[in-house]
Image 1: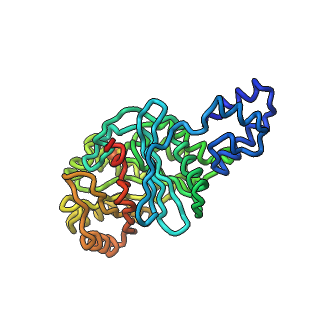
Image 2: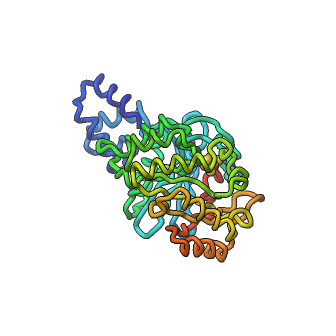
Image 3: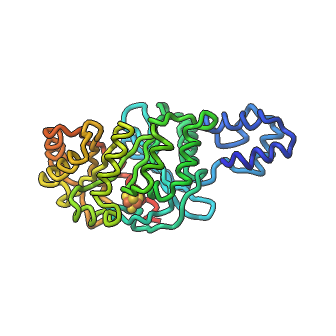
Length: 342
Ligand code: SF4
């Protein structure tokens, strides 16, 4: 919702400032995305607002619900016709977490990623990023789905640190008590390793969680999976993470996709352990192992046994590790899979 434009309009109508507060409460706290349903406003004002503004800057054109009902994916059409994806996930009972996109497509071009194949089209505005959260708030409300919607992850389409200005604005809106009022510690930003922005991000949002997509600690394999590794290599990542850990003493999540025959052997696990120990502060590093979501013919998910063996090796070496559930395989839940099919 573009609050600035609405504020200006209300002033032109001679409405008191309090009206904007009522609208913000209804929209950001209660998840109402139709002016006609904001009962605290007069009927006349609701009608005027409805004929002049839309609360959501994007329109849902497809919503898919996984069989287990633990993941819901929406394809949203932006005002210029571009498509983005956003996913609502329930990692555990009664908890909902939204995964938001920050760009249309992505320039990073990871070889395992459906969004990478679309290529970069444009950055999302802060409003287009936070409207994904608003969409899910209203979706839960309209469908009477209970649970605590408390977590946001920037892990959808795009690389957050390549759209830092708008991501920064969107984080401020998510955290602000005047808007969504999410706790900073409930928000995570995931980067493929654009280390130039880490210092600025951590200074501005020291309480927001950082996740790094690593996927391999072997330089050749990482470059094959993530060509960005040639620019921001493992050595650079190590140095920047060390600075962050030393200064903030905050946990970093290391995301590791498990891809069959590519990065899932015990040798890969050993290289990963060595790398993490080289960074140091192991107690602050937490590896999330995620079975690859089958998006193309090139890569396949690792077997469950291989994931278990990998986890055991890390665990035995005293590395914090969790096997994350890969949710919603039946609804193309990995980023870019649905938009890429349109
Ligand atoms: S995995 Fe993330 S950074 Fe890599 S291409 Fe996909 S969206 Fe971009």
